[in-house]
Length: 150
Image 1 (cartoon, one colour):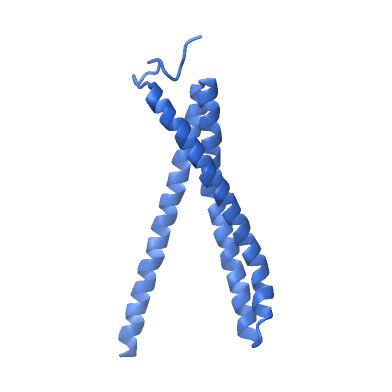
Image 2 (cartoon, rainbow, N blue to C red; image 1 turned 60 degrees about the horizontal axis):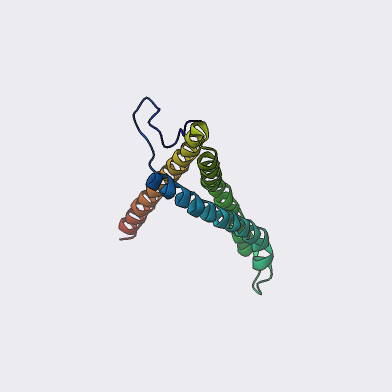
């Protein structure tokens, strides 16, 4: 049987040498580690969100603002957990499929692995653009507020 991952069989003329395969194996191991740590982080975010109400409610000066604040913190942490699931899941799928592709020497699974890596980076990139837009809006609003206060 021909080794599809090391032979020049595709239409682009691209082939993976042993060094590239070793790099991909190591990358998959680190991606798996980071994905597992991401899932743990998501779990912690959910736990913090669930206990935010209890934590704020136990403060000695508990009032309506504290209750609204605890609800807001709970909502923010749950939103962060939901948003974080997608890139972590893409990263985990990349790691899993890359290990499988290299073990089986399967080009289709390799392609799926790389698609998940692309999706991971695309999601992170879009999220970064959105966050930069929020930062720019916040700075703009702060400048307008500062000018209005003068």
